Length: 368
Image: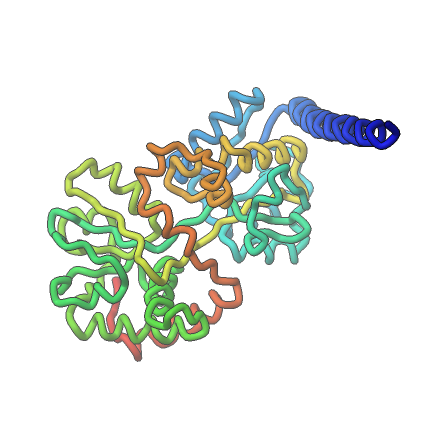
């Protein structure tokens, strides 16, 4: 009898503790919502509505919490966002951003400069460790992978991997979406091709990538033109190596004229990550934290996916079966993203150094 009573007491205790924990979590979120509403506004920067589903996220946040969203300079770049924080350290007015969305390298550098404040969202544990600062100063929000954007009206046999691009049937067909001596997207394209050639050896990827493009150029398959939607449609660059979210967005914009196919290669799958952070000088710090909670909720993450940017919690959402089947059907092979490589900042810096300085001597193609 005593043993039975003890067991019942233990179970009851666990149930009570669980309920207390849930209540505490709800109470904490309720307090955050109330504090954000007292501030009344959130100021964002560099978030065009047609980029990565941001229109849906901004509107969804406003509808859910009733806060005004002050949108600064939608076309700004990562560097502009950092400068906006610096220029408004003592400014509590509408020109001071509360939050930023920047390229991966800007997260650690902004923390080092003392421009950020830490905050860990409720879904913190579902964000991969290699895509976030351990103390919560910045964290990955979404990513893309290098893919082949293809004019399928011209290219009848789709390339499946990087090595396929060397085949005679792709003569005068393959372009990068930038100049590899200056464009990060193009540099990452060279790196990805090299990663495939090097069988996943990151240390060799930059050198192997240069060799790959030298061979591609020698065979007459490489087109030294910066590939864009217009050049793809005109047939000048029927295969463009670019971030998948740009390629998928073009597929929708072009509306079948021409027919666009987007292929994620079977190897050398390289991901490029953007990160979120809260300004240390945010005039609306609670609204900023609430914005982060929304973005990293299932709803916010799926809004990014609808805009073709893979949310950082993508694998978690897929494993939890929270991604609608019709949305998955619009994407390239879902399994490909599970094999994506996320280069560290050090690896990216080394690749950039090698590729930008040796492109002219090794490849010898003047991209413009």
